[in-house]
Image (cartoon, rainbow, N blue to C red; front, side, top):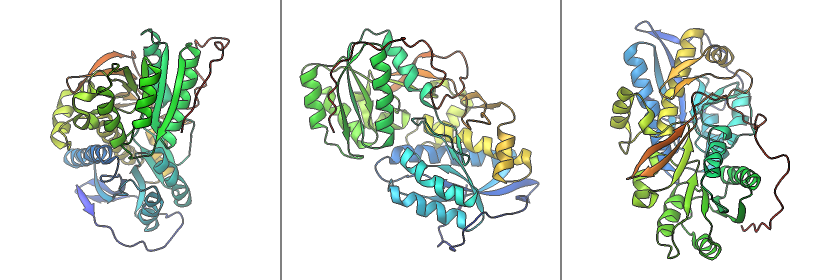
Length: 396
């Protein structure tokens, strides 16, 4: 993968108008910005996503589809760095598309810069929904691909008491808000709700509340070191470990979790057993931990889909590229997907899986791709009235 070293920003702003991408050896050539935190509190996710981008770029070059020069930045998980680094990439006028931004904070920080420059972000990560922006293509799972299938899975398990725990940022707040609403519709009592600072491994208060309350299930929206620390501490709980469910666990986390992850139930749009065998073999070789996560697979699919759309459009102009990308269905390592031209979200197939022996085993899958419903306007089957109100103790 061709890598361009970081150089100081020229300071130029505004939408850069260029001709068609250059051609080399008969293939189109364009620059692609990659912004992934490969160091910092959620480095494992960034490293997996970067590996997916690198593999896609190498495959596309070998196949002669396009040749991509990747211009990389590592914000190291610092929220303030995303705006600065995206401005640096886009102000020089060569990059018109960016793949990256793991967290919702980082995605939201990129959007004003994308709007100033008329650029496009291909976002490959699961997120909490309730957003549509003309400068983003949402390739990751929306809430009806993760939290809704997860809650529906819980409906058949007989759980009655839940505790909610998340990292103290947008993903944690919004996924747990949705979990609280959906669990209440099932008549499940919410015993408490707590948020842990991003990167913190101090879960003592949560552990005490879980021990005192005795929930049947913990809905876990922690990421990074917080996630690993919590599951390790939960395994030592003398009163017995409750069921843990999550929408953000992936193969990128499994080595860090070790045996403490076993039994956790997760929902998402990709798990390693689902990938085509040839892709899995190549991706395992490219992956930093030898595993194929949704972050790796979705980034791979995003880069390929973007490149093929540029080849079809004959230009890297973001509007024309998006028009080409959303004009037809695509066969990808995630299965068949389609980009909705209105919501700008990918249709994906939801899956529910359980960690067993440090690997995911699929419990059940939707029969096919499901259109993203970022604002959850299509939910059906909810009770006409809410259950009797129950006391809710929110702790921060």
